[in-house]
Length: 240
Image (cartoon, rainbow, N blue to C red):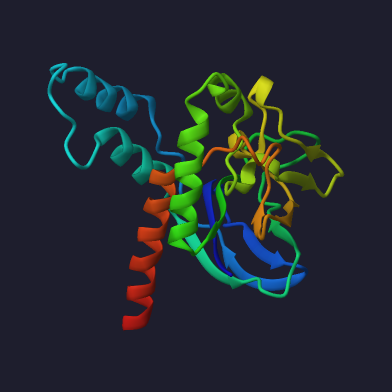
């Protein structure tokens, strides 16, 4: 089966862009510098959009392009890298995003400025539309029951790798995910050298990583947004 690996960073560059190397099962997939792209989910813009939504009349329908999704997706999914991967002969996958980032003004024990990155998007999505539709339908049928609270607490998005990704710094510091204290890789501004690591195994014939596969979440609007972006990227690449 073919999958789409999606990687996206936010980065605040101090002087030099950090270098990223993406490995799949210890094979180099890509190497690139992470461009300056700061988190633009500003409080001002969010409040403005929410205010416009709240000012709608109660009976007024949302337009086809729901503004709640439009502003979120455009700001949440930017600066993306796409990789199509074939996995027919593999039962396990190990992803490693190696980061070389020693850009700072450390001097005599003091550090006040450095280049910081945030792994904001890290998805592994099957390129099989019927499967995605079937999984989404199954989730909806089971989700809105007495188990609804469990679904919300688990944050168990089956194709979002951030929920099980570790940051391993060169100084041996490891950041694990802790949702109870809002401490997880996707919320951290990280400096220094290290790597983001995640391992996947096949379950029910597909690669997923979740705590309870029978009680999963699937963010279909976000996945569709990324797949549309990938199609645009493919079209531009073919023209070149």
